[in-house]
Length: 405
Length: 198
Image 1: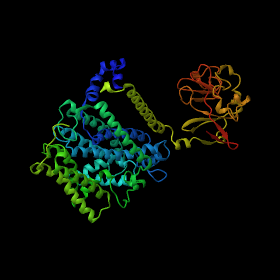
Image 2: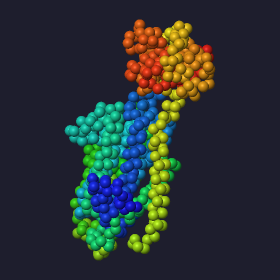
Image 3: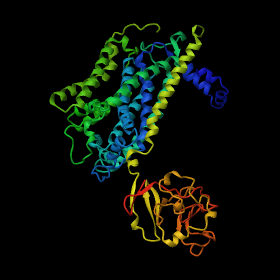
Image 4: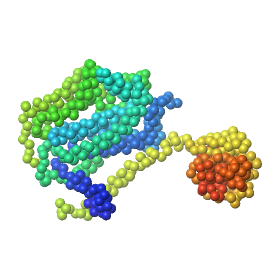
C-alpha cells in the first residue's frame, strides 16, 4: 500500500523537495525493531494516541469553556456554568468533555504501564539513559498539566486541590511565599489563578507534543530495548517497524479504544475515581469538603507528602520521589538489563509496583492511624528500592542471558 | 515472504481495513464538527417579543433578534405615500426573490409595504451586500442628505459601507451593490401591538 503511494508522480514531486522517501525508509519501512517485543511495548504508541485525543478534545472544549470566577445570576460562577453548559446545551458537549476527563485518566494508565515496562525490562540503562530522562520530563509536564486542568471546572475539589498543592510551595524556605503568590496571582486561589491555570493548561500540551517528538527521536537513535534486554545485532533478529509493528500497534489501539469507549459511554465518572463527586459542587472558598484527595494518578505522591510530620520534609520527600527517577539510570549498576535474568531485582521491582499501588490507595483514602503507618512503610520502600539498586550487583547472582532472541 | 503471499487477497484486506478506518474516522469527526454549531441554549433564545406601540410615528428603532439587529419603523401616511411611483428604480419591486418567509401574509396589495400592518415595517437590519447596518434617511430628495443619495431619492435607507440604497420598504434600488431587498424574518402579531419575531 505504502509502496504504491511512494511510486506515484505526486510523491516523487514531494520527495524531491522534502526528502520524504528517506524519512519514511529510515523511520518506518526500514527502521529495524527487535522481533520479540511483547504487548507491553504497545503503550508508547497508545500514549501518543491519547495525547492527540486530549489535544483535539481540549481544543473543542476551549471553544465553550470560560475561565472566570465571576459570579453569575444563578449564584454560581462563569467557569462552573460554562462547564455545565457544555454538558447540557452544547451539541455533543457531554461526549467531548467525558472524552477529555476519561482521557486524562487513560493517559496516566498507559503512561504508568509504559514506565513500568521500562523499569521491569531495564529500558532506562545504557545507552537509553537520556531517552528515560526525557520520559521523566514528559511525566512531570503531564502531572502539571493534569493539575492545572483539574482547577478549570471550578468545583469544590478543583478549588481545594489547587489550594492544597499551591500551599505546598509555601513550605519552601525563603522563596516559598513568593512562589505561592506567583502561582496564585493573589493571596488565595481565585479568579487570577483560574485564568493563569487555563493559560498554562493550554501551553503544557504544546510542550508535551514537542518533547514527545524528542522522546521518539531519541528512541530512533538508540532503538528499542526488548524483553530479553540484550543488544540485537544480526538482521535476522530484527523486523521493520512498518508494516509489522504498525499493525501490532493498530491492534493495541483497537483494544484500547474498546475499553476507553466503554468507560466514556457507560461509566465516565468511574465511581468517583475519574471525576470526583465533590467537583459537582461549585467552589466555595469558605468551606472545605469533608474529605479531599487528589485524582487517583497523583495519590501515590500525595501519600509520600502526608507521611512526614514536618511540612517541609514532606514537600522535599515528594519532590525527591519524582526527582530520583532522573538518576535511576545511574543508580542501577547491573550490566544485565531485563528483570527476566535478575531474580532479586525482579522481586524488588514487582514489590515496587505493588508498593506504588499501596501508596495510591493510602493517598485516596481518608487519613487514619493505620493507613498513615502503612503509607510510611510504603514510602520507605519507595526510596529503599532506588537506593538499594547501586548495591544490588554485589549480592545478586544474575542468570545467564541468551545469545540471541 | 512476498512470493508466497496472495497479493490480491492481501490488497483486499488492506482496502477493507483502510476503508473501515476511514469511515470510523469520519464518524468520530461528527461530534466535533457538530459541537461547533449553535448550542441548545443559543437556539432557545431564537425568538424576540416586541411591542410596536412603543415606536412613535415616523420613528425607527433597532432591536435585537438572535443577536442580529432588526429595524422596526413606524411609517406615517406621508411616508407610505413615498413608496409609490419609483418601481422602475427597483431591482425587485414585488419582493419575489426570497418568497418563503413572508408567503403566509404577503398579498398582492401589501407587496409594496412588505409588512403585515402597513404602518409597522419590520426587517433584518443587515445590508444584503456585506452585512452593515444602513442609515435611515426617510425624507425624499437631497435636501437633508446631500450628495450621499441620488437626486430622485424616494426616502429610505443608505448603507454607509458600500453605498447601497433602499426605499422605505427596504427594497433595493438599482445600481446598489446589494443583491436583495433587506431580508424579512418570520413574525406574527400575538395581540394588537405585540409582535413575536422568529
